Image 1 (cartoon, rainbow, N blue to C red):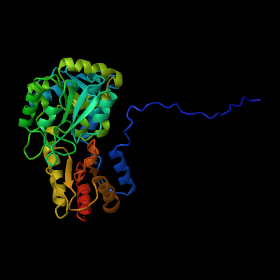
Image 2: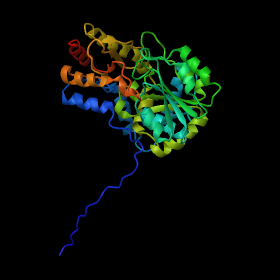
Image 3: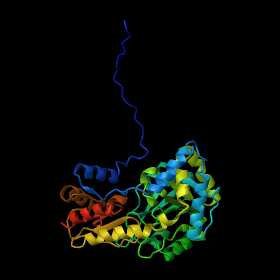
Image 4: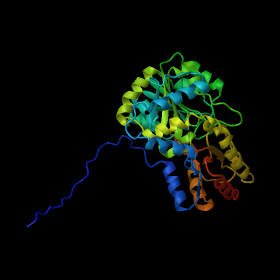
Length: 392
């Protein structure tokens, strides 16, 4: 007679959550709602168009050439060389490709790794609200304490008096982001120099999130932390091939940092991802030999920004300046009395367009009646979205 297993009632063990206040991200929620209502999704920040076929060919060729096993932990050598050469050409600082450039599994992993490598339990990390939603959970996972300092409401410029007041003997790290998600502002040369002066007498490290570095409009210039010796000497500079080359799903990014910082970074990197997809790295290295794709990116996205803004003429949305990124923010005060989150829910269901409330990027849910649209979309997508929004 066969042995019968008797099921007994069991209870899954419980344990304290490391992120008790974290739920599903607003991007996932709004994308799901957009799909449910067949809305035009201008919420989550990814293109709805393909990348350059030459890039796909380069990756395919790398696969067929046999580049399918582990690359070096720090990244494909030719790709690290290409990144170092690009930074030197654009910003004037030459990073050692062997000791100071690391290829990562996207910018999000890069930022988490930099935080885990530097932040001890109880260390304070300053973030500037509104900020990308991964920063604070990353700090908490490292045992650190997030210190939120608001950017100036309305203009989203850095408030150096408040940043200075937030620095204490426990401050380990400051995170900045320019071009800035979600506000689409960019830091000026003067602001970067003021930050350099502010940090000079401190031991505070810097993460400079520069994933939108090639999306700066109207003749503006991206002010990378690499341009300023006093910042570069203390900074992890993070960028993203996904944003630059329209391949966000590839999750390949870069970190440039002084050798001493890179050594600590790689200690963590080797044990959380070890390394990154080999043929994509090899293909990207080949593709980067032509600088035109990233040099032409500002004009490409400025045209989309302008198309979308023209389409919104006649709506009651008040458009905020868009100096960089592929995001456009709009004040909804003249359209609705709803708060940002309620308005975005209503907008999907009644107008058929998905946006993101800026309050989702603030720790305290600060609501200033502003929502964010993503214009990294096909022209026909933007035309359709704008036509729907003109109904407001």
